[in-house]
Length: 49
Length: 292
Image (cartoon, rainbow over all chains, first blue to last red; front, side):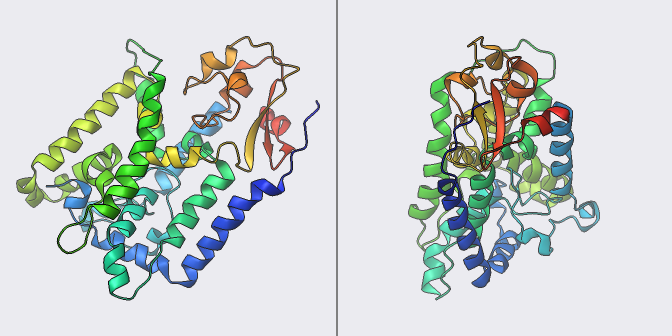
């Protein structure tokens, strides 16, 4: 089995980017914002109307 | 392997819809777990839902972005985009095949005996990219009312998971809502019936044609940490992988296609020549998985 070794670093670039975004979001207290949005979602917004 | 996948699909469907007190509270779960991202399409207005839907959260963020900026709270959505980006960058569309409750439902419906029509025209797969760009991003952001607020177009007009998991249960739990039902509800009910009936004759039609979350995850299929690998010297181009694939992909002709949901049937069921292996960051996992 001859598997070509591709540079793995490139695969971790998007992951690293999104981990930084995720941590930034936590630092900005965005999880609380997501929770508030989930509480406040209107009936119209879920297609009841 | 297929049994393990099915168990995992059921497990995730249950834990992301584990709020069993809703028949008594008659309302949706509002606890702290709702700050966690559901990996698959799972409406967060479902009374039992314990997690937030990434597609719903993105639209809610974009439709209120003007209001957010005007009030000095600069929410850029980095938590939501970070969450689904991490899932996508790690797994690509493995999530669709292994963790999505609506994908599981479509697979179960496909097991109903009926005149099967496996092939869905290839051109229809592009619809989901339009849905992602227009209904999830552009319309909520651009088409605003007099107060500068947009609408969650995908949730409001299209999402069949929302109708099944939130719309119908809520009108059962809260009879007062039945008087408010009109065009919006019946339009979404129509789309839900279309996709559920279509699922009985074609494999995963919503995933193939319309799901914006699958479209997003698919962008990572060729770059994700987990990937399938083709050993060209072992491949005989027999087409066995195509016959077992729920997404109608001949693996050797389209390696890590953006449509592939990594159910692994091609590797574990179809291929007799060890031409397909799965790798995590370049490390082969095939021997471990074939023992499962």
